[in-house]
Length: 240
Ligand SMILES: C[S@@+](CC[C@H](N)C(=O)[O-])C[C@H]1O[C@@H](n2cnc3c(N)ncnc32)[C@H](O)[C@@H]1O
Image (tube, rainbow, N blue to C red; front, side):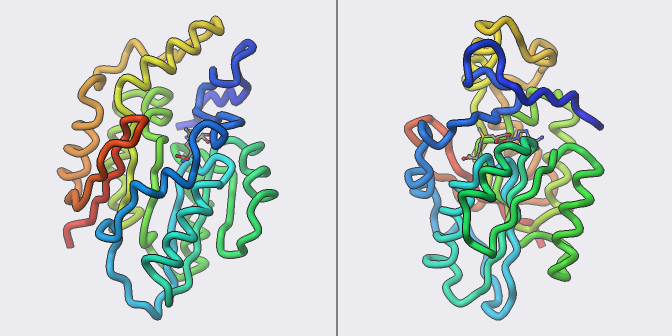
């Protein structure tokens, strides 16, 4: 599926964006504090001689990606080589991520995770490390943007496809309230999310995500307490 990608913000409000591609995200959503929701028990045991290959979906300007890299390196896998691929739909954010990050183990590429052609680029990165799946996939505050722009069915298929990408998923879904706020911001700027009214998965979206993942190869292994933004970070491991 090819999305109609409109990356500009609507009207005068940088918060009225179709894909959550906020230009100033980390000035109001501090990346240090986000890391506090992570816990050692979320992460798989990996042979220390192996390279650890991770994917960060919807990395924005890469500040959280960098924090995650340092957290993994210092706290979880101190003797391993860690490599993270950060992908984002917005090329301007990806360029900023590249400019701001000087860690050679982190690669940023512009990629729409819902687009089949772009998924091939991600697969190439994985192949370059001789891996079939990522060791860990991170999906922080991006589920709503995929859902609201693709609709229930595509979103559900996306969740089902995780088992092809990884055995270990860390996910921070947005609750329904965030969807309502996003639609309100768009409407104030005389725009909207065209699929919003058609969504049937609504107030139950967080439950839907857990249910879909657990019916499709994963078990939930940890859930953080809610952040001050009322978001929980959950880890899922595949059933071997
Ligand atoms: C709210 S930000 C979250 C940034 C980061 N993951 C975090 O939690 O700090 C959502 C990001 O997802 C990106 N995004 C939205 N739809 C996407 C898609 N289909 N493919 C890749 N990135 C996407 C946006 O451009 C935006 O940078």
